[in-house]
Image (cartoon, rainbow, N blue to C red; front, side, top):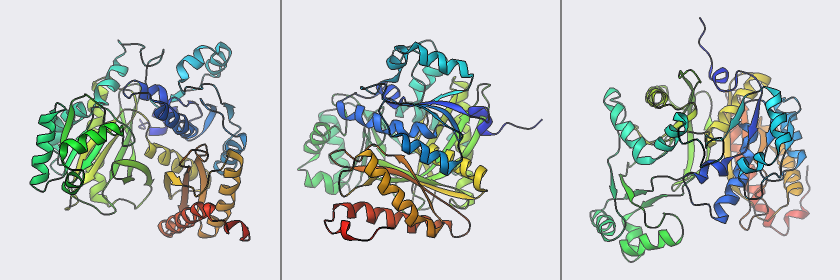
Amino acid sequence: MRAATWTEAWAAGGRAVHIGDVADFNAQFLPQSAGSRRQGHHYSCLAAFYSPHPAVLVLPHEVEEGWLRLLERELGWSAVELHSGLAGDGLMAPALAARPALRQRIDGLGLPVRRWGRSGPDGPAGAPDDPALAAVRRYEAKDESHALFARIAPGHPGVRVPAQQAVEPGRRLARLVAARAAGGRTTVLKARHGVGGFGTALLTPEQVTLAGGARSLLRRLTEHQVLPPGEPLLVEEYVDGGGRLRHPTFDGVVADDGSVHPVGVGLMDVEGTGYRGATVGPGLVPRGLADTVAAFGLAVGRELARAGHRGWYDVDFVTDRTGRPAPTETNLRLTGPAVAFMLKTRLDAVRGPGHLVRTLDRLPLGARLGPQPLLAHLERLARRCAPFGATLLPTIPTTGSEPEPTVGIALAAAGPAAPDALDAAEAVVRSANLALGDPFEALEPRS
């Protein structure tokens, strides 16, 4: 009997309904400030890529129809039904509860419904007895995922698990950070929950000195909402390393029957402690490292399945100076790298196998642009990327009007020259984005 593929396990191998409920998922774990809700709004654009082929896209914020039509053309999607602008606060559960006709429409399609992650049928407070929801809420915590890593690590000698301890905030934490800095050691601080870099801080000895001491630095990180106030923090061993293979990640799917299906191994782009994007595709990660990461990731998936989890998950790693991977967290939800895997799968299906896909979620813009001008700018850039053999796809087209404007895109290419094509296209996009702030840029001829 043929084993199911991950696309069959995730969306029955066909089309699906995608609901952009990033804010709903995060509300279970993170303070919902105006800024975090706005970020959830924008990140919900990634709902377009919750499976390789959406049928319906439901978003909290208003998006341009032209964005979706562009994606349909490039990805060979059949017409996607769009419902946007449903939730001013970003929370989709109450917005859908208030729209029985839309709920009936979705139910009537009989398609899989895919979300960012499980938050209960009635939103973050719902279904406390749901074992799948209980698994999410348990293992999204970084101390619980660390304990899971430690339990299975003896069967995976190629993986090292960083030491970790919980410390109450206040003088004891400050003394510990100060002592580590005095010994020349970098400290990793983690809240139990965090996303996209929130709740994690990397404290080098130089930073401690420049801030005037550990207590001053910790106070500043709390005031700037990098770390949550008044909560115990996890002090984790810093794994020293660097280079192209610094941040591998493994994605997998736990099917409804509890079976675990590998999706793949990719490389994340991490700036400081903040996730910025990922690259996936053939030949990207050396075989030995990919096999080690995948074997550990599958073992984590089996433990999550036994705990009741059903759906997408990933395991993030860092590598040390010898290239040995160390797991840092698991996410029981869709992730930024998941978007790259979805796009690769779709492009391989409609254009032929072998695609490399790179997602870049927060590319700076040199000037603020509204939705239509931003899409026009990106379409011009797509034409400039085409001669390299690279395809440009907008992924987060709603952040161009923010006080610090950015845009999210994906770049894809296939064949032996794909890595160079992605690098060249990324360089062009970054340069052109920043040139939007150049008063002379408008005088340049445009293709």
